[in-house]
Amino acid sequence: MKTYIQVFLIIVTLCVTIISCNQPKENQLPKAISYNFTPKDTTWKSMSIREKIGQTMIVRAFHKEQVKEFGSIDKMMEKYPIGGIFVPYWDFLFTPPRDQVIPTIKNAISDYQNASKYPMIVTEDFERGVGSIYNEFTNMPSEMALGATNQKHLAYKFGNAIAKESNSIGINWLLHPLVDLNMNPLQDLVVERAISDDATRAYPLLKSQIEGMNAQGVVATIKHFPGDGATIKNQHLITSANNLSISEWNATFGTMYQKMINNGTPCIMVGHIRFPAYQKEKRNGVLLPASLSEEIMVGLLKKKMKFNGIIMSDALNMGGAAGYYDNEIETSLAAFKAGVDMVLWPTLKFMDSLEVRIKRGDLPMSRLDDAVERIWGVREKYNLLNKKKNIFYAITPEETTKIQEDAQEIANSAVTLLTDATKIPLKASENKRIAIVNISHEDRTNDLRFTQNLLQAKGFEVDTILHNPNFLDWGEKLNFFDKYDKVLVAFENRYFSPLGASLLKDKEALGVWTIGMLPQDKIIAVSYSNPYYVNYYFENAFIGINAYSLDLFSQKAVVETLTGGIPFRGTSPVKLEHDMLK
Image 1 (cartoon, helix red, strand yellow):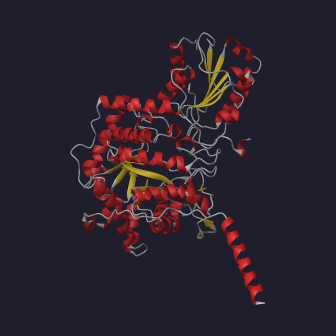
Image 2 (cartoon, helix red, strand yellow):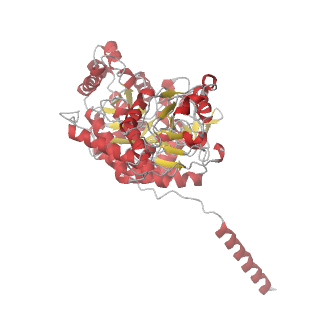
Image 3 (tube, helix red, strand yellow):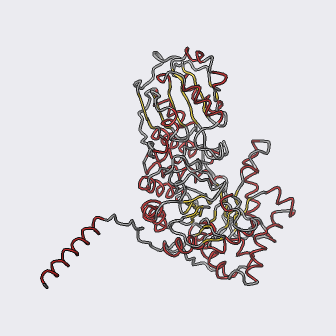
């Protein structure tokens, strides 16, 4: 009897072993290695409470308004000794005369720097280069173009170029790159701002890009923890979510963030993004976004992942952070209490309110000291404790030329051929007449004149650029296009243009309808933004191309690849075939 029982137990043990071996293994994060940001300099300990609070604030530099209110920036800083500013381009760019915009920005930054006891942290978003906002500088291809190149040395050049031009106008802290993955093709906020939908492709390029930024002494901020791009929600409008399982998150976003933490990334921006698979605590019955969640910022990021750098909030005036507390100041205070070390875009009154809360014991002094010590450690590492004689890097014409050459190399390596049923290259002797049709929210006719000129220089006749031709007007006169050998359909909708849409609506949709009625062998479909547009709207086009960005370098690369000047080198950084797009 004993023998039968022993045999039975052995069989059961074998079955359990076999079953457990066949179970999918839970993905785990890489080992967390604590990077030491503890500052040797202890000056911060002798600061007043208001000076300490000021170190945690990145305030919008509304220079004229603040001078008007306080009389001078010196007087403002006497009352509100803030540690950092964000340069709001919308407060400078549209103030004439245009040729005085950059000098005005430099003057404003100098004003804040001169009024500050310590070097001012000066931040901005230049995800596509300084020239994406200020045309005196280089408008780089998008991050997803970088992903299409899949080359680390180009990622380094990309980060280095943006940091160098940022330094030239006094920006020493950049609020990028994105560590988001555009996993959901209906996502309208991330899209070509992300390098890829694949963490294994994105991480080496992000690492190299940050190394390029660090080489210029510029602080990088990776965002938006715990990771955007998995759902279609836009955190500018509503609270978004990362809806991956723990295992899926560990294998993708989690692995990227953990490796970057281990590498010594100085600053992580938390998004207005829930992480339902991880969170348990609720407020008024709902999960909080990461930017307000102690569970995520302290429990996951600071403790489990051993992040000793700075947690920065995303802007707390966004819809994704709204509604959980009574007003924006209360939201900022709650974010700080929950674990944010550096608050993005608080009002100056935040300092008054936080001082009161600490003095009456609502919030422990240890929370403020922890935040300031982290900030001081990063300041020390990036030489932001002592003022420099020159706060504007003197960029040379030769350096600018090199940056532009690097941008062109990135664009040339990014353009991706999706379909080719007509055997590129195009020849002016065979396809002389070309029309350009721009499908986009904003009229990009002026931008596309560059493509028009490039094609004309190669012997093509390009006399027409149309913006969103309307089916209701064009339906009876489509024979207009009979005289053209090819129609280049240029898609371009980007982040915030328009806000709140991924696929095309209204006039853009009518434009697709109209051009879709033409013979498909006439169509050259090129997306200069969303990589899913060509496959979705013109899957039967004889030529389909993704270029990811409408900058001049990418336009030139498209013309050169179309006409055989350079080969197509890019590979798609995202999966283009999705069930939800079928």
